[in-house]
Length: 135
Length: 135
DNA sequence: ATGAATGCAAAAACTTTGCATGACG
DNA sequence: CGTCATGCAAAGTTTTTGCATTCAT
Image (cartoon, rainbow over all chains, first blue to last red):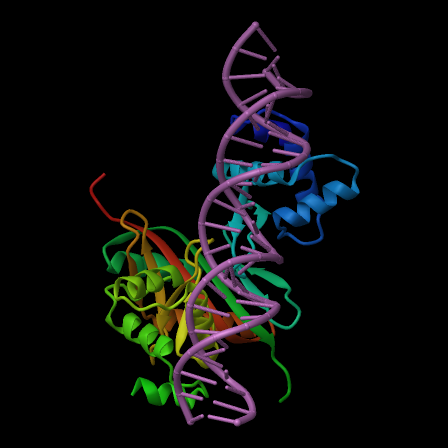
């Protein structure tokens, strides 16, 4: 079925592309950097270059197969696109990324854009949070 | 008065630091990259190195004098901190950055964090928009 | 067969660092 | 005067690109 996705995107079905999707599907973390994926490839014995991983991810992003984020500057991470849009919350202590959906915020954003004479095309919302603990 | 800010931040009052603040205050755009600031310095005849600009901006960020953003990956921009927090909207056609404040969204964010057992420390919201025009 | 995809290494873009010199308090 | 700050150049990171080769269709 990933083969079909690739074909639909006008991309040839090649080993690197299949492996990258596979790895992202099986990964513990939904969010992986090009380097992360490359490391898994190395450990699997695949000989796929890092440059190819970057190229594949870039193409996947254009094709809507993955989404790209820059939670911390100096490092992009990718995740497989989901049907439903979601935002992210980052636990500053553990670095863990939590996904959440909130339609109220989505609506507000569209409204704000409109108030300024714009149409909302996309958005990125990241909450930096800390475990609420007894002080 | 900028001198006072610097002293309060425990930073010596030096020409590079004063000039960077000056330039950011006078700039057309609120959001400047290190390179942007460096170019203005060059045109002003100051001989201040790019490395110094980066160092100064980093220190300013720690001191809360400036805020750092990564609207497009691969380029950080800085703006002088304002009393009131605001978010950003980017006109995808012109690249223009629009600032806006919306307390409803701020409140929702805090609420969402809490629902997940977290305390909201910081957040970054960027809306990517296009002029709403007749199609 | 033929254009697209890949691997490798080199380059690019942005930022940081080492070290000797110079300036602030 | 003792530090802290600066300039310059060199190194670091992350990502992109050139080019010959290989692969998918």
